[in-house]
Amino acid sequence: MNTFGHSWLYRVIAWLVIFAMLSPVLAGCATRPPPTIRLDGIVVDGRQVARYGEQGLVWVERGGVSIPVSVGMALRTGDRVRTGPNAEAVIRYPSGSELLMRPNSSGTLGSFTEFLGEVFVKVKGAFAVETTFVRAVAKGTAFMVRSGTTGTTTVVVFEGTVDVDSTRGAWATISLRPGTMAIAHPTPPQSMPTSAEELQRTRDWVERLERLVPPETGVSGAGVAAGVGIAAILAAILISRDKDKGDRGDRGDRGDRGSKAGGGATGGAYPSRTPPTDSTTPKRTPLAAPGGLTPGSIGRSSGSTYCPGKVILSWNPVSSAGDYVINVEKLTQSNAWQRIGPTSSIPTNTSISIGADGTYRWWVQARSGNDVGPPSQVLYFYCTSTYLR
Image (cartoon, rainbow, N blue to C red):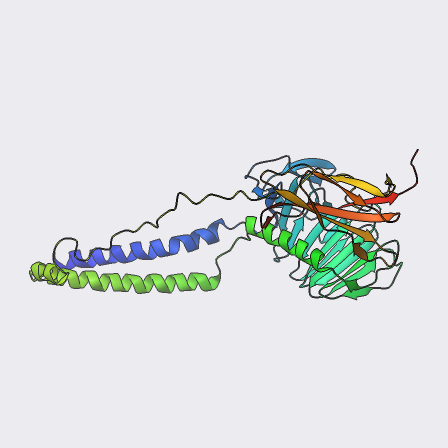
């Protein structure tokens, strides 16, 4: 091959290598959507990720019209997002802040106002969750807010500091630190330790949602520069090797090169290896969060449940569950939650003893051997020993 042919071939190879190395980087930059609030994911029944285009799980009220939304949809400030009874939503902001919504929750985007239900917030920058009566303001932190139709709001802090105040100026602002919580309205909030069960329950939920709907990773400017440098180095190496091979080929050294490789056509080859698979290993079906809980409501119940000494808790069965773990707590006069459970049950109902009238909350988890599934939604009810007519 003449000198001109060698030069042309080297240049083609170099550009092909550079293009191949940079294509993923450039494609990532070109296809990345503009910064916007996004519905990044919907999780159905606590374990299944909704498909792109699947609707009827989460709705947005925009301009007075309620419209079903699907994964990947761009959201706007002022949109009111509402999750269905079996859907959890993952919403991410351009700033990096993140909202994880439980089923039957709703709120208006901006920060997150007029909120009802349960939401976990990871904040980058300043952010606030506001209910009718209570506001939780944070900067660079992680916290959970739970609010019902009666206005009672629970704030639990996991990282950083959260300021809790009244939207109507009914009490002075208090600051909550990691591992503390407060219950506000109608009484002023007071900082109190959060139970280990509450912290773990929320952590498990957050980890499950983020594992199912991981954040997208973009390509940074440093990544582009690194890609260019790697492409150039590899192109130079390839040109140098091919040029050396071409020169030796022109000198008639092909026979020597073959013998140095170790003899035979396969002397320098690397066999492809496919990792072995164990077809005998059973695939474990993850346990789902139980649904259909009764009695109770998302927030503190405005009605009453007649329970003279006992109350029956029931829920829908979960596939593959061996039994269920039931967690029950009672709200004390000091606005702290006192543990009554947990207990366990094989059927999908259980009877618990009620020592006195008051507000209770409960949730349940499916269990199979040592595997415990995600917790159900927390329900509240007010128990009275007075017969209701």
